[in-house]
Length: 361
Ligand code: GDD
Ligand code: MG
Image (cartoon, rainbow, N blue to C red; front, side, top):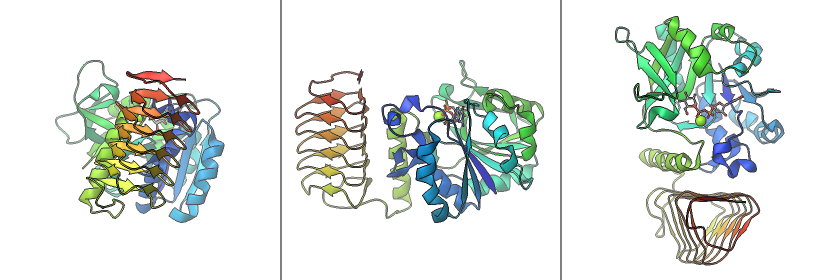
């Protein structure tokens, strides 16, 4: 089987992290986001994965080549010279996707869940339509594509409304599809939105179905959701009794810590924390509902709460970081500083308090 992952876009909503690393390579649960998807595709029997890229492909080529062997898949890069949107990339990769005339998967690269690819393929093959969208329920549907159903045929989609202004329902497009090869014939080789242009045609043809997702789901393309998604992901690991979670006298709730990190026995970690490789957490430090990326240090007695600390950063002693603060790569926060909802660009040093949401550049 084949799969295409939409990896384009500049990831602006995940800045300042994406100023250093393309969104799909930002570590979620201590692994590049896209590896969660590659692994799930591979374990569902996918052998050919196309990454549709339009931004800094070199970094990704370098990072991902080494995973081809590990997961037993062939990864090819389909590079756009101009951003082709969410449908154009399918046309560009037509040769690979039409290879054996069987259905292929399409994934948004910023979506985290227990990917149901095997079940999705079975469901799709059984209904005989041209496409199936994975659906999930959310409280705030306005920032997603909403799926409305025909009452007569179960799961047949009646209407698809991308980013509705008025409430039409709360079952949304989870950003995972399986499509028949002939769907590519509906797409022109130009910037095109699958949500706004292709899905409405399939709806009109009464050939687009939805498949309900079980369990957690989150689009982790912005900091607040990245943190919520982390909480859900850790919770799902806990339910599976995963050995990726650590236990200890200074650990509270669901926590993931890379084995190379050095945590003071007097620090308190959790609930809901992810600590990356080579991180150092000092005496009396407190990390909760936060992600500390590789090679960063949180010094003694600091509190890090609802925060993402980017790579190679240092948080001084007696600091307090909270309110969806995000530090970019190589940031220094001096001792005793308070940051509430600050987004700090790479290589900055913070020596004054940031009491409310602000971009520090
Ligand atoms: N190759 C390529 N080229 N990929 C692109 C381009 C492009 O020009 N533009 C966007 N993408 C990729 C993004 O990287 C992301 O993986 C995916 O397409 C969707 O784009 P987002 O910018 O993340 O869209 P969204 O989150 O606002 O909405 C989409 O996802 C929701 C679920 O999270 C839509 O598909 C919604 O319908 C859906 O509910
Ligand atoms: Mg998104």
